[in-house]
Length: 405
Image 1 (cartoon, one colour):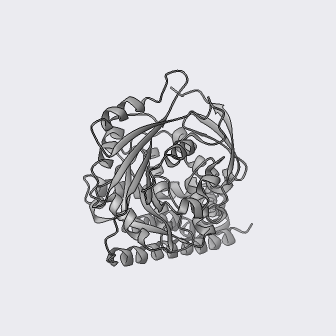
Image 2 (image 1 turned 90 degrees about the vertical axis):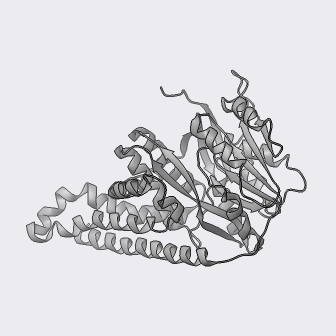
Image 3 (image 1 turned 60 degrees about the horizontal axis):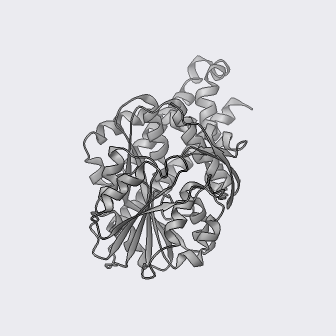
């Protein structure tokens, strides 16, 4: 293919990328100015757990201290294990919840030991939902590895008073605690995704921070979609769309994941898994968008620089190429301006954003490779278990994998 065509195509898709970021920017500004009446239905927070550390303990405690005027309960859920009886998080969660009236701990069956046809996370969620009290009106979901503020629940629940909204979703922000390069690349890879959330059809439900009304379990056929599924949030996204409702992004409801000293192997496993699930769960637009937006830039910037320069000559060959990574740095910087002020005011966040923006071109390259790789791969490893994604609603549990030292 003529190199100039590749460059022009790349710049065209960069313009599309900037339009998406601009759309998200204006949506965020409008949403922050929107005032809504108080809405405080009874809520159950479902918090699945796997593993335990000091950060996990801090995150779990924050769920018990939500600034929410209505009644809410927290259901911590983890799974049993044949060798030890339960996941390591189970006794810690019991200790945390034992003197808290609005908290309980549930032990879900192990999918491998019980030959169940779904992922462990999906099983954990279904175990809680199948035993919900009848008076619960809203169900909220939060991952164990995210830090939330005390207004998290209120922000997620309030927009659900609008019947046109099927689900609300918060943002996900990776905050590296150390500046090793793989951690910065992973952070920009994840954080860029907030620019794809807004008031449009590309908005997706993220399982780490979302909520919907209980009635949507039936209207969206949620449990039926999850029955044999690998992941819950992408199926929830499809359910909202199928019922002609909106996914409402709440820009100030951001869950923070603190990371440190990530390795390239961990980054590739995580990002490939995310893209494989996106493609084979049927969210073709998001996958194809990553493929056409990011892969041409990845090929151009990383793969063809040695071959481009001889064709263009010393005066013109370099400029079209070097501007592309520079623009990606600007693009990421603009994306981060949508972050809520409370997050930007956190200690070291500003410094981290200034440093991590220079990893954006590599993150774009990685996203393109992830999208290409997902074309040929259906198998993932998640939580110590290997799965094969057969369709949006069906997976095959292939068994446990050995823990890496």
